[in-house]
Image (cartoon, rainbow, N blue to C red; front, side, top):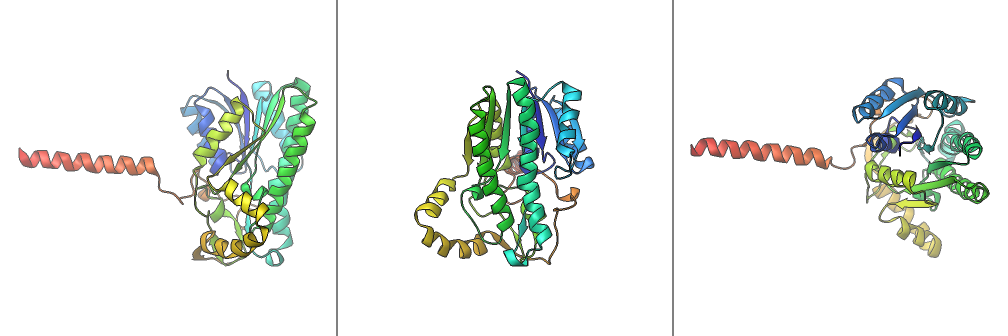
Length: 314
């Protein structure tokens, strides 16, 4: 059964991976993000896979923008069956050294824009007595880490919002709310983040792929679940944070500096908080090897070597 799916943050990271995952299933896709040129790239990728696609360049933090996105989706496809909100930004730095406007923009994008997307989607779902809202949270909605205070605050807020919405949705049969919480994911968000810490951030290992998160989201489209955790150490970290808080606090700072920050220096900058950077947008962030490409390269090299040996033998 084909569905109309709205995806915010569709030009990069998890959002782009979700668009690709759903494109081959016959779903009608409404792709939203700030970069028109990159949206066109993702549109072409999805159309090549057979999907009907509408792109809507939009900044989800702008007043009225999310409602306009919903109106465009309904005008094109007649309704909305699923809304997937993946749009997110980050800022690195000690809380007192991050400019107030940067902290507020992280919260505005990662929490308040998600709340507006939920508000707009749920009003339509309730009227139709059907629909699935999928919010992308983070393991940092259950635990904390230094130097990411805005992101942590927003994701904790999103966790609470999702639980409240799930409780209210018990009164509206047919309406489902899902929360997908990834751990470290190989996306560009770490290099695209604002930075006031002096070192570029990176996803601490173990790192999963955005495609794995996209598959979890696609599963929620088919069979909605209250909460899905994607990451091998997520439950272990949550256990340590809850059961051994003193030890957790002693270890998390050194581990963050060792595994969550690269050695590459960087000066203070706003990243993509206020304006997008199309050149930095992609599904993968380059923190993991591209295994299909490696396999193709090895296969090509092996074939070439085999051909050379056969020619020599002849």
